[in-house]
Length: 200
Image (tube, rainbow, N blue to C red; front, side):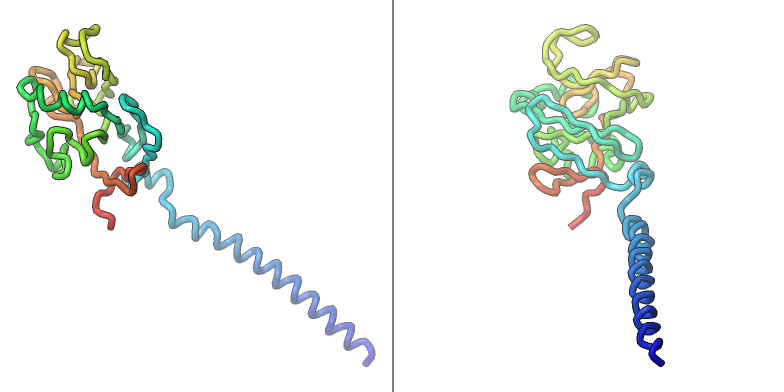
């Protein structure tokens, strides 16, 4: 009879210890499940929306994020570059982005800037000719492989297609269409969500 209190105490200590270990194990098992609600890298590549931070971007600066395996560029244009966009319509193949807008230009970007905010361009950095990646040629004026009246924009070095600072293709170039503007929206003044424009 005198051993019973010791046995109860030992049993209680054993139950506390096993409960504590079980609780830690349950938490460890639950973590991957909860973490799985976040989109994986594969899901992001397959099309999940991605954020890009534009904090501190300077005029003439470009940042990139990958969406659906494609490079998406965010360019902060200078006020001079924005003003120049309305002056070169006659040199462009599709100045008003009327060709296949469902694929290349969402309604909120069907303007001369092809953007929500005139200052920022959000565009897929893939040439519409054969899928090459153009290079940034933001400086205006004569340069190798560019016309003497170059206003600034993008040059696809593979076959010579040129695009202005709104991603609009110049006339008589191999690329048939303007650069694609992906679905996007501003989450704040410094964050852009690429791949979704319908979130509340």
